Image (cartoon, rainbow, N blue to C red; front, side, top):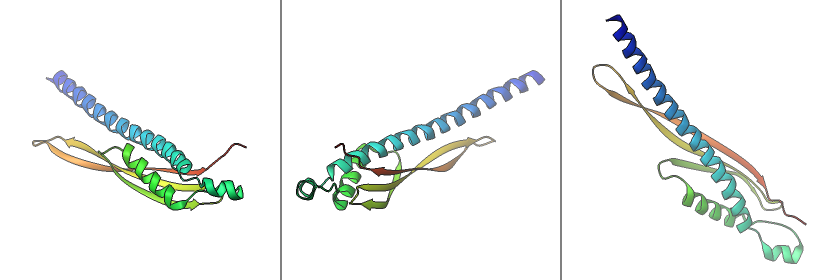
Length: 140
């Protein structure tokens, strides 16, 4: 009888460990996805917002603030995961020199099951935040 309790304990411990591994793997994948999406989207939106007419006339590299925000949000929403909730904050958008500071929050929900007589489901919410400060570099 004593050995069967140990076997049940080890199986239950293995199931709990697998649930935690799955939960943290999901969070890690979300963080990597958000960071690469933020980086690529920022770079592409900065190139889209370049003011070519101003560069031809004055020789000054500048971006249009409204065009950058519009392009960034459009590109980000096209590639973002529909299973998550996002919050995007623009801290700084300088036109000359082209520099942006953006922070993206994504809200992840993990579900845990507690034992006992009845199976009870509990939700845990995690906030994953990524921040980028980007300066547009142009070759001469």
